[in-house]
Structure formats: C-alpha cells, structure tokens
Length: 164
Image (cartoon, rainbow, N blue to C red; front, side, top):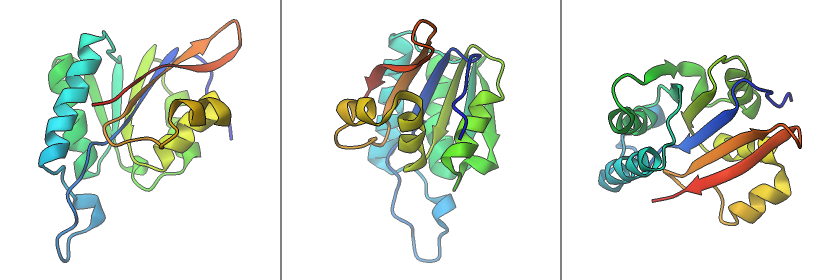
C-alpha cells in the first residue's frame, strides 16, 4: 500500500450522508439519501464552505447516495467546482482510494465515498492511533476529514474533522 505524496497537499475525505434502506429488489448501489441524509449533506457542505474548505477537484462514487452528497457539496462550493464520478469508488479497496488521490495533480482533492474504505483511507494517511483518537466511534455518515501534508514531518495529519 502506497501512501500518497503531494500533490495534492490537502485531501478531503467525505463519507456519504445517511442513505435509505433498500426497497425490496433494489440494489445497494441505487439506495438514495434518506430525508435526514439530504439535510445532513446540505449542512456538511455549507459548514465546509463556511470554513473555506474548497477542493480543486471532487471525485465521487457513482452510487446514488454519494451522488446526492456530492451534489450538495457542488451547490455549496459553486458550480465551477470540477466534479468527476468514478465507478471504482463503489466497493473499492483502500488501495483504490489512495491510488485515485495519488494520481491527481490538483492541490486539494475531495473523495466522496463509502465506509469502511473511507475510515481505512484515513487510518493509512494519519496512522491508527491518531485516527482512533480523533474518531473513537468511527467515521460517521456525512463526516468530513480534512487531511493536510506536513512537509516538516513528511507525512499526513488530520487538520479538522467536520460533523453535522
């Protein structure tokens, strides 16, 4: 497993907001955000924008619940935000997440994806102890980790964790 090096210098890891339970015969991939999830996606997107957390590029899973979360961020950040939907982020490994980040040239990249992979990616970037200390209950839905590269320490550190 390769830990990304800059660029990007900042990585935003956003777990999709709360999804509805699957209807009979509905694929997991097609589960939309539930009512709470829609509200939480808007709140977390607004909080991120208010804090000046604006990625140069947003990369989202193509799953419906991630698209709904990414759409809220897109609205809050402005329609000039470059958004890409990537199939491989659904049911991806942590290596897939980190390879996608590592292949970007933008200074700040946001991934909108799924757990447990989102939590695993954060753990690889900042280390187990820092992750457990910051998120003792795990990575919540609509949680946003802001991870910056620390050139002095030559590693990644959690700068902020934004919740609804």
